[in-house]
Image 1 (spheres, protein in one colour):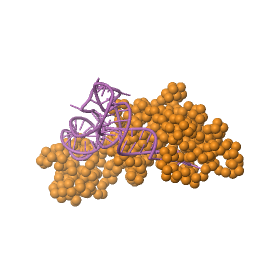
Image 2 (cartoon, helix red, strand yellow; image 1 turned 90 degrees about the vertical axis):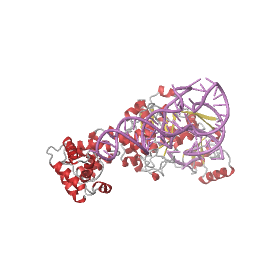
Image 3 (cartoon, rainbow, N blue to C red; image 1 turned 90 degrees about the horizontal axis):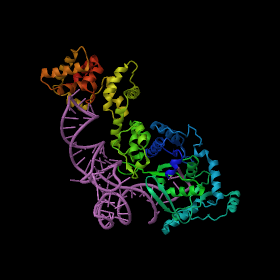
Image 4 (cartoon, protein in one colour; image 1 turned 30 degrees about the vertical axis):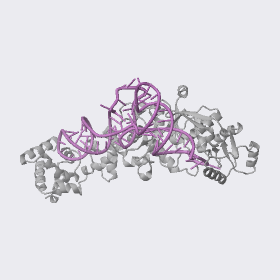
Length: 489
RNA sequence: GCCCCUAUCGUCUAGUGGCCCAGGACUCGGGAUUCUCAUUCCCGCAACAGCGGUUCGAGUCCGCUUGGGGGUACCA
């Protein structure tokens, strides 16, 4: 199987069906395909599997491409980047499928089936009742001759085209991450290749397209593993070389159940809305089932691409742990450069209706510097920055109990007067002022900062007080303390 | 029912027969730094699903059991 990669440049694909949002499981499949292509210097293409006309969703298609781009997984070929193997929408390739199915029909590897939905249901019900080991289509139409079938179709009868699966023997294949797998052919049924509406099924379209588009490796979800012998048989019928198979384990929720929107965030869009960086999501998802072979965990996309190999993908399905995702987001925020973070903060502030047009950039830079190590989500930046621009109108309830209690007014007055006497309102000077004051009046510094902090910011947590005061400025700091003074005792 | 995949701390994982009385990370607990919070840094808790083989030796190989997941569509 490694012969393929040795003789042909790697070509892999992400082939979603535009029926709903991009699930994190799907995202990870895309990530691995992208990583592998980039690591091997190959091509990553996007193919849209829109052969189910009932479930097709235009919005889903649009969102899917937006989310992929947001994650940084730009495809080399596909919608919007036409390559040599298009069209990349299966719905635009119907003539190709019809051309290819004719080959199978001519070779006697496929046949027309006239069975109705009702008959199929009856057959299935009967099989369930009798507990036979073999289920599926009973091959009722398998021996109808080509001539008879075509005559019936000419006469107006509707038919599907099925694959003639060998009745005996074993179909075997190698999976890159699971090893050798074999299925008894007698357990496989004659799957439908072309549906009654003329559209191909997934099985047929994906095999034809993967071959025609030069796909060397198929990295796809675990749920396809039991269809793989059928695909393998189709390749054989066509006389084509199958790709290297690589079936990825699923991603489960914290409790080992299915990750679903009902139980929380499950799609790429959900996590974006929650305030995660795309770099975080890609990093975390990549590590859910893969590792670089050393202890590195927080990695850039570039680093992961460099270390990525199929051999290091795990066969076991993994649970999604949002706690670790959160931690990792903090790590990635630390890695972002300040200018980028400032942009995010400005956007968030603007969304809150705060006018920044007269703000000196240097002041914004200083705020970002203070907030950066405290942010876990991108929107934290703007949320924590508000009081630098707007005086608090309410004060944290617990903070009021703790810091505005008996004696606080006296302390605040002392602090206020000390601050008022400072001409050079800078961090080290303010700090010295607090320490001198503490010594002078016999308090610990810690006892001096609670009330002023709450008065100025409205909250009890935040950047260093001296830094914060410098940024807000002497005049405004004094004003805010005065405003809060009546609330103290 | 039948078929297939899977199984190391609560979670993500390292481990490819001796280097493992099992290592790292998240979480959690404790501590240091400190004006609060966060960051950072130390320390700690915590696992080879069970049972049988193979072997001088098994987390690592094989079998069975159990648990988990998937498939069994004219959906992907």
